[in-house]
Image (cartoon, rainbow, N blue to C red; front, side):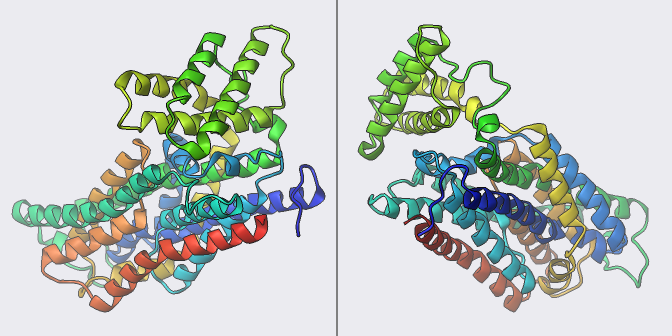
Length: 458
């Protein structure tokens, strides 16, 4: 049995490996997902492939830097607190290996088969699998450590967004046919010649928009995952936000209020842990106020804050509680979250570099599927622009509202919608393979990650 103890050579070696794996995952995400952005400009001859992927890479880079952190920690909060920060101080090696190994393996498998698949689905399935595996490790009931409310919220966004992409591209294409009479917009490219004038630059603009929005949403996912590895490698530096002046930003009165609010947490399996964590934070708030209390290690403070944040979220989402209790929980949670949910500038930069470099390599397989194998006819400028305009709007909106969505699902569905709008129809065989991959991704990644986590932890 492997023992992942703090500062052991094995733990540090595997944490370094995990840091490499998350960068590789983001790199693969780049050439897997961003092919959706460059397919239209390449297949309409608007840009040469080399120029298209460089443009997309640059826009992905800028999107990551401009994006926030709401998506990053919407995913992280799917896992139970004792997985994020193990209570014995050991690095979260089983969690990291299970996450990155599972998501990377499935991403590479679907890329090799040329099937547009969602990196978001991969990582979300792996996260749910880890949470379920953790339930078995601790002898809880099936999935007791999973935040099912958040899982359902994320899955709803993943399920609804492709339907919006399909319908939106269908309607936009029909509107274009109704109001724009330029025939160049509706004809496939002739030989190697690009579309004329404004049509070409419209497609360059939509490609840039999808790439930027992809970076703003998917880049956040890797930022959250990189931070899990960073905290494992350098807990003294990054367990808590170094920009926060106090490790526990609560006044003693707020800390007392925290315990009173958590008394209303209705999850018996975790109320005791959350209340014990709140009591320790109350004590530490006294230490900050100079009451002679000895400070505890930052890793323990991090673990306590995650326990308390999870409990406050449970209070906030309990429909049976009065609005005053929910408001108190929301306010206390907003005070504590920035202490553990942050990302240094160099983590953002690392995510941006990995995603943009991945965009420039290995995109051909997915591009060919999108350009030739979804519809029954060659992609036209109007079809590509309709899919990408709708896709960019949906992805960008989701990125700033904290919902992880799939660029692959939205753009692929958008192309299918524009093909249906034009009357060309879709190729049933390829559509069936894509839908099968979509349906298989979650159960496969959940099972793989749960088995890996249980095997490494038990």
